[in-house]
Image (cartoon, rainbow, N blue to C red; front, top):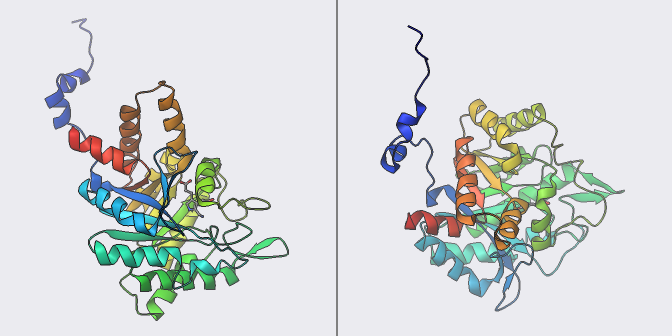
Length: 326
Ligand code: PBG
């Protein structure tokens, strides 16, 4: 009568086979979107110092990357341009011969099945490094919207399959949707960086994209890491304005937000596993402090468990390789 009563959870953990039968979350190469940094110039294949394994490639090297991704089962890449010329209004972001436009045309011609996502922002293209037009030391919202819509339309014209605006101006989804529709691109979806925090985890990316702000910071447009309700408001606005996917960025410190966004909206949610999250693991692994493969697969799994349908990640190629070998 005095028998101890408790549940035996270990029953379902007894063997590899049993564990895989009851596993709730799986990773697949189709989950990943691989970020590619395309630079102007020739024969460039230069490793980003703060991001071992990530390269700047010139147009002549782009198809190598794409073919490698395809052979690993990766369906999509997101393009970041690193232009030679920068100016106050980021003209190279919407130039017909801009580096992203050229890379997009090339990929869609040589590998039409590869889904090309174009990051739509101005910070890599402006000489001040901010994501919008500056006046009196301030980033102006509404004048920036016109340039973003122009950028999105030029990317769609080049063949981009998905437009991914990342600059956090208010109304950017509405302005881009309007611009795309007006230009006849009703069928091009918007993958909005709906929830983007002002994060120090972007440090290595800014080295890679040469996009650090030359004065001030991005706190007047990117979100305060302390806020949760603000993230829900941001996501609601983007859904109302016509977003087709919602990105939460960064990923690891914001898994709670990812889950809430997923539960609140019936849209695909995308985790952006950012540069700092990548570099920390690479640094620890280089020192032999962690099991690199296990840590990476664990963290990617945690993003899917938190509600992400897709993951933008610099680990895409290596993770796909490991998944194949398993
Ligand atoms: C551009 C942009 C940034 C990232 C993606 N798009 C940087 C920023 O806001 O400064 C960061 C990506 C990363 O850290 O991997 N607005």
